[in-house]
Image 1: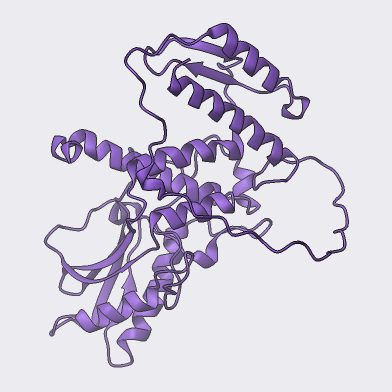
Image 2: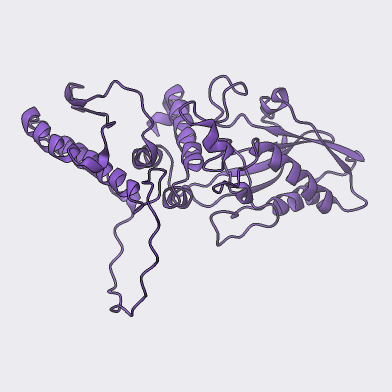
Length: 346
């Protein structure tokens, strides 16, 4: 059997195991059983930990080994036997859907109720992570900047970071790595002489916005609105505050971007001081969908933690909205590359 098929089978089996572990609350996720929580067992001293060497950097390892030109055709009967046995686990329930295809030919090799739409929950984050790391440089960071569009007209430009600190950033943190107070101080220092006594502030939300923005829903249509309302996840945006991340039964703001804009206006007022210009916020779908001109003057910029650290946080905490944010950025990057042969060649 060819190596890609072996890798695909292993990935499917891993997903099944992850879903089972999620059901029994062994890993982060939304699947669970309605059962009482046992009391924690008394702690006893354990053996000293054994140091384990770190693996090679993930960026140097391919997701799948390349397929040999003379690789044999996969055996559908063996694949079926292996997957039927794995999916017979009663812990997976009776609503499992699977579709396996040959990556070389596109031929369907195995199907199990694959045409029925369903929410695949936390296991999909594994596949999303593979897609994200295939398109985004794991060492790259996200930019949040302010540009001077015209005298007295400031534009806060979203760049994907939904983990902004309301005050100063913490360079050792992932959530709160970049801070709005730091950005405001840069803007106050960079304002040109002759700035009017009143300035306006708007948002540019065109980064990775997707088709139809700003009329598209703030969360994927497959998500239950009640999960957003109860704080199990949040609206998906390309800018947000770390403190507004959802917690069960403590919902996030419906509009994370508006919360950032309000917080940043406050930080600007503080940074400008009593003798500085007054800040007026302008915010509506039309202004959000208007890209800042390329020639607008850059007044300040703060950058997030690296993509690899943000993705690790999303997976560790099973954060649906943060994973969706990164996936949309990856899709946007891929679309931009498809439109630009020069980017594809590089």
